[in-house]
Image (cartoon, rainbow over all chains, first blue to last red; front, side):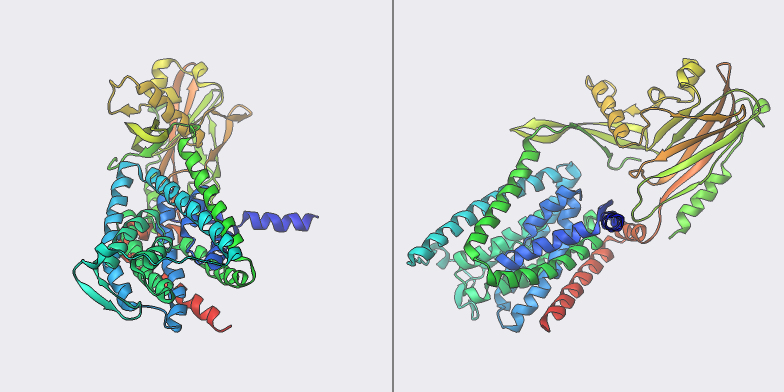
Length: 319
Length: 250
C-alpha cells in the first residue's frame, strides 16, 4: 500500500532539530520515550529520570545535554505531581524546606563538579559510571524487594522492624516536624538533601528513588507525606540545577525538555490508571529486570573496546 | 538575527577576487561560481549539495579546493584503565580546517608537481596542520586519526570529486556538504592548470550558517545563559501547572 508507506515515511521523517543538543531526532521517538518513562513512573511511583537519561544517550543526545535537559523536565513533572499531593494536604513544607537547604548546597557543588569534569573531557565517563552503579544497585534492590513481598504476600505474615538510629538522637538543632510526626535534628534531612543534591546534579535525576527510601527508613517519616514532600524539594533543587547548568554549561535544551514533558505527563496518567489494574509485585520485578538490562548495556559500552579509539574535539580556548 | 550571516556573505562576496598568481594571463583565464553562496542550517538539515560551475579560456584542467575556517583541535585517545575505556592522551593541532574538500578533472598528482601542490595546499597530505608538540613519538598515529575522523564525518573528502567538462571550456562539479558541517565562512578556490602550472585562479565564498528558531535558541543560550536558565525554569513550571490542570478535571 503506497499511502501506508507514505504515512510511515512521514512519521519516520518528522525529525526535529534540537538546538542545544545539535542533533535531529524523530519527534515521535522522543514523545514515545517520554511517555514510556511516564507510564513506568505512573506504575511504580519512581521518577523514571534514571531510565530516561540513559535512553536519551542511546538515541544520540550528548550525555551532558541529556542530563541538564532532564533536570529541566523533572521541574515540570514534579510541579504537576506536587500540586496533586498538595490538594490532598500531603506535603510537609517545613521538612521539605530543611531538605531543600541541604539540596541547594549539594546541587551547587554537583554542578561545579559537572563543569570541572566537562572541562577535563571526562563528564561522559562519570555520568556513565554513576548510572551503572546506581541502576544496578536499584535494580538488584527492587528485584529482591519485589521477590520478597511476592513471597510475603503468599505467607501473609510480615515481620516489620522499625529501625531506630540511636546515634542520630544526639545530634543538635532538633526541630519538630508536625506533619511528618517527627522530632529530630534538622541536620539529618539537610544532610540527605545535600547528598541527593550532588547526585541529582551530576545525573540529571530528581533523586526520588534515593530520597523516598531515605525519608522512610532513615528519618522514619509518616509515609503519607513522603512522596509529596520529596517532590516539593525536588522542584526547587532541579530548578536551581537547571539554572546553573544553563548559566555555566549551556547544556539545557528547552525543546527537548518540553517534548519529554508532554510525553511524560500523558504517560504518567496512563501509568497511574494501569497500575490500579495490574499485579504490582510481578511488574516491579519486571521493572527491576528492565533497569538491570539498561545498566548492563551501559556497562558494556564502558568496557567493550570502541571501534574508534580517537575522537576530535575543538580545543578549549583555541582560536 | 539573520543579519549576521548575510553580512558575512556580503563581506565574503566583496573578497571574491578573480585574480591568480600570474595576473596578466589569469584575468580572463577562468570564471567560476557556486549556484548558492549561503547554506542555511535549519531544523531538519540533512546536508546540502552545492553546484560549482565555470568556464576556461581554452583547454586545461581544473582543481577545486573548499576550505573551512581553521581552528585548534584536540585529538583524544581512549585507553583502557581498570577495564574501562577512558579518554587519556590528547594532542593539540592548530590550523586545522573545519572542512577540506577537493575536486579535480584528473588526479591532482598527475596535474601538478609536488612543490606547487605543497604551495597551494592541494591534497590532504599538503594541508599544513600544525601539531603543538611536534616531538611526540605518537604524532603519526594521532594525525592519522585526525584525518580519519574528519573523513568519517564527511568533513574531509576521502576521494576528490570528479570535475566534468562539457566540451572543452565549460565545467561543473557537485560538492556534497555533510549535515555535520560547522557554521562559518568557507572559501572555494578554483585553479586552472595547464602543462603542470597554475595559469588561473579564482576564489568564491560559501557561507554556512544556522538560521531560524533553533539558531536563535542556540545563540540566546550561549550569550545569555542566566536569562535562558530562568526562562527554562519558568517554562517548566508553567508546563507542569498546565499538566496538572489538564488532568485534574477528569
